[in-house]
Figure 1 (cartoon, helix red, strand yellow):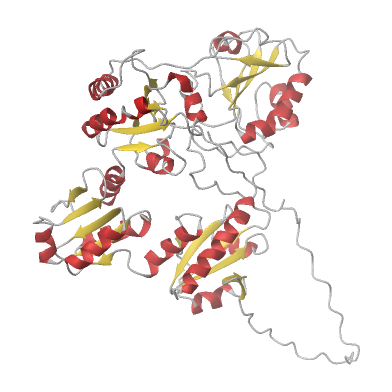
Figure 2 (tube, one colour):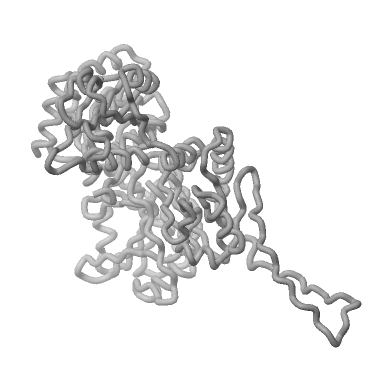
Length: 553
């Protein structure tokens, strides 16, 4: 389901790119100059060749610089070694570099038993091949010199997150609690604390708990087997308890004696109950909103500067507990920088206060009756009606511009899409875009050139549709830009275009009747639609790929 979890609450700004291996700005590596033999070397006798001594790993800002010759030695000398495989021309690698150095400094300052290193992938092709490096940056964690089974790095790409991910691997991922004082100190220090109460710390459920704690970096974990702590917190059997300084204050996850502790179930429980009952949307909270894996979101649009709007929050909070784990309640301040959210729901700031409901799996949106008051009762009734199928979703569509067909690139909206796309006398090539999408803007000149090239072909139509303002039930768009070809003739045939985004490849595609020639590289699939702005890790750059990436939504 994770792959289908499409966070559609907001339109994503920013995306990431893919780069070619071997096509970096430096080009191929230069061969070292040939070494001339010593002038006084006797021609009749060759001196014995000296075996080169093993090189020492270099170090830059507490980060080891490794090569084929020095990796083995580094693995022997450093029992916990994180290695970044990078490419000098990779933008994401350059963005990661200062954070990686900061992480190394943080860990060195506390004398942590872990070392950071890096390998220039294009300059060390044997290592890149050995460790199956297919994109940059790739990070792998080596333990105890084990060269054959490194752990893939799955943590954040900022210094504190990198350091914490490593701490939880070289040290305990949960703090051992011996008494009430330990427990209170841990809970007082953080807003959210997860404590595993286990009567036997050798039980396999404890290993499951600690394994989850290794990766849940945004939570602090504790662990105890002390009977007095079981009694203090009213427990009689193994239980994982989430303590929080808001809402109900505590949520319990009893461990099933027969089935044991399921890490997936526990992870979902912690994500759900660590969320506030009502969350205000922002760039800081959006990643957690979508990580909660709750498919239904209810949004209250208000202007936080107006007293009358803020008063509605009480009713919103009152309704929220009834839908804990089923519907995520989110407040969107129309007075803040949230225009992209308003646009996605087809709203204007002056329409606040109002509610919108969305299922982020189907991307279907729902609205209450126009003018309905926003109270705990009406909110509850609205949610139940949507969940019960009593309200139909709505779809956005702009009006048809009077000059929609006057330019080489025709302008489509929801109301004229069917008429143009399925005209049996035309071959129609459509770009589905977002106005803010970087890659859409980058390919715009090629799209205009294509339209100009074929403007005298009466059977060819080059068009574009703003998919953020026009929704098509039959063609949900999950990435920007998305290109589709509708060939002439009966049958409503549709072909997804997945080739390079340049005039030459576009032209070959059209001239071949909608076929991508075998020698043309296929496009790497783009990010799913859409993801919250500035909250996701950048997509890595893939060596060897020659096409443009699809932008995130």
